[in-house]
Image (cartoon, rainbow, N blue to C red; front, side, top):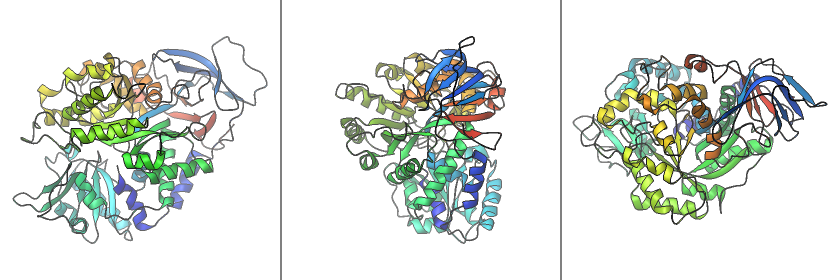
Length: 571
C-alpha cells in the first residue's frame, strides 16, 4: 500500500538531508543503552491481561530495559540505582501500540504532497499548483489525502481538473484511504490505459461520462496501471522515510506498531536501522502478500530481533477495497450506486489457498475486509479452516468495518482478532450512512458487539490514511463522537467501549494481536519498559482533554527516545 507515495521521493533522487537534521534535533539523539533506572514520584497505570487498571507510583527498570519492580505508594525504594528520574507527579502510562499502520507510508506521506487538510476541490487544486511551482525539478507530482466526500463534490474528480493546474508532467494522487488514485492526462498516457482497456480483476477504471475513456480515477487493483510507472525509491529514500515515520510516531506516543503490508525492501530498511542501532520503536511486521512473506520469512515467522524491536509475524491479504471509493464488497448494492456491490480482490478458493499456504508454516494471517460480504467470506474461511489449522492461530481481520450482525458471534467462537481503527468511524460516519443506508448500519464499526463475543480488540490508526495520534482514537472509542463532539450522544452509541477497554485495546490488545504479550504492552514485571509521561490522567480527563493531551517523554526499553523539552536525551 502507498507505493506511489514511496516512489515520489525516488523520482527526484533527493535525500532531504535538511529534513533529517531537523527531525533529529526535534527528536533528540537516543539515550545510551538502558541502565538500572528508577522512575519515581509518578501517577502510573498498568494493565492486566483482562484489561483491568492498576495504579502505581514508581517503576524500577533493570539494565536490560525491562520492568524489575512496580512500586506502590509506601513501598521501599531501591538504593544505588544508576539513574533516578523524578516524575514530579506526572502521569505515566504504557506506550501506545498502533495495531494497524503503514510505517514507510507515514514517512513518505510526511515528505510529499498532502491534501488531507483540503476542504474543496478548488483548495486542492491551489495546493497542487503551489507544490508543483515549488518543485519544478520533480519529474512526477505524487501525493495523497484527497477525499471527494469531504469536498462535498458528489463525484470523483477528473483528469481534466488536474490538467488545469499541472499539465507539463504526470501527476498521481492517492485517495485518503489508499484505495483509489487520481491521475492527470500525462499519467494516464504513461499508464497505457485507454477506452479499449479492460478493468483488471479486483479493480476499476472510472470512465468519462458518455464514453469509455478513462476519467482519471483508478480504483484498487487498477491503481497499479499508473503507480507501476513511477520510478522506484532508493534504499536511502526508504531509510529517510523510516526515520521520519519513527519521529512522528514516537513524539505521538506510539512505541510499537503493526506494519501492514511490509515489502522485502521495507524489511531491509527495518533491518538496516536495527543493525545501526537507529531502530527505536517496535515493529510487528505483516508481509505484503505471500510472495513477500516467503522472501522475508522463508520457512516461518522470524525470531524477535534487536531486543524485541522487530519480527515478521505473518502476512497481510486484501479481500476488498474501501467504502469511500465504493470498492468495499457488500452483500447488497450500495444505497447510493444501484447495482454496484464493490470489488472482491479474489474468489473463495484463492482466499483459502493463500490462507492455507501461510498457515502451513505458522505465519499469522491478517486479512483486510471492510464490506459485509468480505467479512462474511473471511469469517466463513476461518470457520472452515479452524479444524485443520489448530492451535493458537490468532486469525486477524483488519478493519472489520461492516459485519452482518448474524455473523458477529464467529469472532468470539474462533478467537479472531478484530483489528479496528476508531477514527475511521468519525471520518466515515456520513459517508457510511450514504453508502449503506440507515437500515444496514447495525453491524457497522461494531466495537462493543464484537468485544461482547469474547473476541480481542486491537486498535490502531491506519496511518497515513488517518492521523497516527492514538489519543484521538482513544477518545473516539469511548464516545463515538468526533473532535467537535458530534453527533451529540455518539453515533450508534451502543457500540462504544468503556475507557478501560479502549486503553487496553491501544496497549495490551495490540501486543496480544502480534504475539508480543509477555514482551511489552502492560508495564508489569519482566516486560519491556515502554512508557509515556503525559500531562493529564487518561482515565479521568474529558474526551476534549484527551484529544489535546501532550506527550512529555517517550521511553522504549528503558531508554528515553523523545523529550518534548528538547535538549539532552538519555539516562
